[in-house]
Image 1 (cartoon, rainbow, N blue to C red):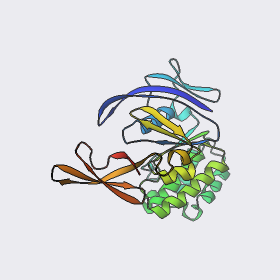
Image 2 (cartoon, helix red, strand yellow):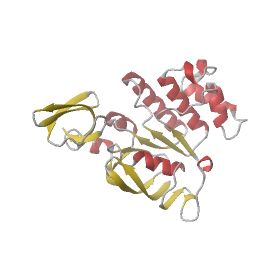
Image 3 (tube, rainbow, N blue to C red):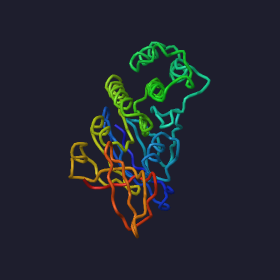
Length: 271
């Protein structure tokens, strides 16, 4: 189980805010973090991974202390696999070399073969990132993260840049890997359908705090909760603004008097 309470001041487009999150995640659980852009979700992942240091609090995983007021375990010494939105692959390494490089024990090449098979990359193992599609790169990033044999797998909007067909196929692969290796998985996603399909529990973060949490089918029940969407267009209509919001596969339009929202913002609206 991972148990943490972290605090850190972050700078959002609305100004500075204090990220203050306390949470326990059971071993084998899949938890999705949801909430508007700038609310602190990615910063929270980076704090857990050791890529940033909290200002106060603690992080423990099972019987290991990763962070407190006396201890700070370096990222490479934490049992964690991190999949970034931009893949972060090494351009000068083939797929097989990427996975071999990630192995804690270089002699365990059978794991590399197993991951190549699980992700459908066996026939592409000799290729380099520049020769791969977006979906193939994401498969490599996922396989490389698991090659570290982590206890915790962290996914930061890993499928957001992919088309719907590729997203669905990779969701299946992520679920298969989560189950096959008995991982504890933490996912940041703005896609309600993706969260409902994968997660056991949803934790919503707004302005640096947990606003609510529960089962995906409860929090994303049609009409019972706000829906998270992305602002894709803003037009002026007399003295108001017509805002177009993409919510999954549908678009919503709202007339608003406050022009403070911007293109690309994530906003909550009700059905």
